[in-house]
Each structure stands twice: as structure tokens, then as C-alpha cells.
Image (cartoon, rainbow, N blue to C red):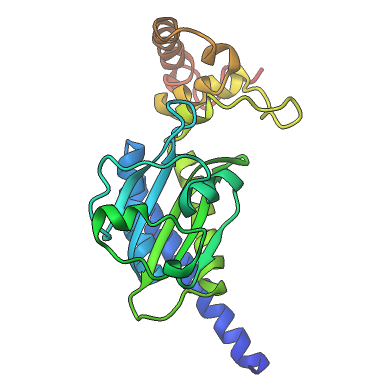
Length: 256
């Protein structure tokens, strides 16, 4: 491929990627629950990858430790279906944090086939990539069978990995993973810096203030009833200091 064609190809890929991210952001922006966001994002991902089916698998590692389909596009009904870490391709990807691309699932020993047995759908080829935030794997995206009957290739894999990273970041910005990440015990060296009260009460709105507060270790350690009481007090404080900016003009009362 000539230099000119390579440059044109790279430019086209860049435009396609940015359009996809914009579409993902629009799909996720107005969702308030993780399940709704997963469904909205999956529709976009399956479409741009040109797949017949897809699944967002979610790892409930702080619950019963199972992996469940939280959003499904095509491929049949997976209601009540679950995997354990290491089981099937999705389980392996979540366990290892490494992506998988399989050209012929029917002949691949890594493929379990349990989902096909339940739904009657025939899986031919597949890409599965982890969903992670701050190196914590909370699920994976799995796309199945290209609509044009071609095989998935390394370019598809690289593109899906980019979309997975962008999706996780959009979920983070929406605060959809705050409760999940609050359960993660980070090693001291990897622990995110403690949120200051200045950051909390300088938030632009009450929802952002609450998201910041939930990141504080001392708050996460409280019981549910105690958290509710602290939240009520915090909302009152934010409304007085941060939310009532007209009291202080444009000056932030927390910045002395």
C-alpha cells in the first residue's frame, strides 16, 4: 500500500472511530442505570463491528462471583445463564484480562458452547475483549459472526479494544460504576488519591458532589443508614456553599 493510500486509510479510520465514540456518548449520556447503558452501548458496538450478535458480560465479583449477560443483541435468549471466571471464552477473558479472537469456534477447544446449546444459535467466529477501569476487569464485550460472512481480523480486534476502553471511560464519567469500584481494595501503591472536601463541595451539581463523596474511603466504610445520613447533610452543605453561588458571586468559598 502506498504512503498516500495508507494516510487516507488512517484518516478514514480516525473519522470512523470518532463518529462511533460520539454515537456511544449520545447513547449513554441520558442513561441512569448500568444495565440501560450496557444495552445502549451494545447496539452501537455490534452495528459498527458488523456483527450478527453480541453480549455485554458483567462480572459480579463482589456478589456471588458469577458472570452474567447484562445486555444481549441477537443470538437468542440468555436469561438465567451465567458463567464462572475461567469458564468459556467470556470467563477466560474476564479471568485473564486478555482479549481473544477465534476464527472457528466450533473447532476451538477454548470454546465451551453452553450458550449455543441453550439458545440454538450457531457461533462461528468471535471477538471477546475485557471491560476494565483502573486495571479492574468488571466484564467483557463479546461480538459474534460478521454479517458479511468474513472472519474477524486483528483490525476488528484492535477497534473493539478501543471501543471497550472508551465505553468503560464513558461509564466512569456517568458515575455508573461508582458503587462497583467502591468495593475494590486497591493496593496502597495503586490506590487513587483521596478526594478532598474542596473537590466534593466545589462540584458543579449535587449529583457530581455525591459521586465525589462516594469515592472517599471513610464514606464507603459506613453502613447504608449512616451513608444516607451523611448524604443528606452533604447535600445541605453543598446547597449552601457550592450550590448557592449567588451568595458569593463568582468566588468559590472553598478557595481561600
